[in-house]
Length: 308
Image 1 (tube, rainbow, N blue to C red):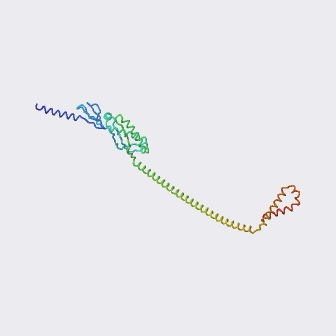
Image 2: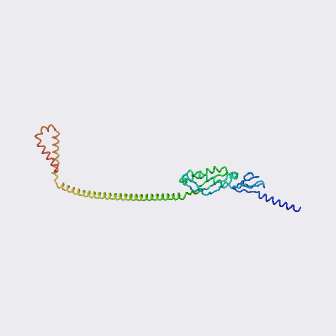
């Protein structure tokens, strides 16, 4: 009987150990798949849970975080029979722990093989140039196909990125030569364009300078002509003044009675001529005897006008 307390103590310690080992604390972004007697029972979320000893077990611990898988390069053949190495990066997240645990054996291997076959199907419909320039198209098509295929496994594919595309060495060397030729071509075009622009600018500068020189010569000729015209006008004014002075002096020397008599004599002759031409009947009667008298009068009038 002295062993009874020891046995009780041992049983209590064992019970505490069993309870302690079967208390489970599920952390954030984790999920526990629980089986009871070998069959699926439940999925534990965040919190404290008690597992029934000897009846239940944790079948799988699933991470609900977004995960990244980098697959090694895989050989792919394009539409124009060019073999290249392509490696991809897959971003996925587990949305259903039960389907992930029981949907497929070795899910990572299944996703890798599925991504390789999907990529080969997509690249097989493209040629080399399209493959090198259509990464966004390849990424979107692969993501859609993989997301649809992995949905029964409780996996959601968020993104698929083509990490690297490695063409064969001979194709890569030809591409490098082509790019070098393109760069040299662009360089030659840019150099020729620069020379053309410089020649245009030089020609425009010479044109502007010639125009400015022509304008300057024109303005100089105009100024010279204006100066000569002003000089001529000044000389003419001086000559006119001197002529007026001479005329004034000559008119001052002539006697006033002669100038007055010539003016009166001219007016009398004009009045006589108007009288004979307006009086037709009188003119017809006296035409013959008066002609010899009128002509001297008119001639004398003309001479007097010229002289005086």
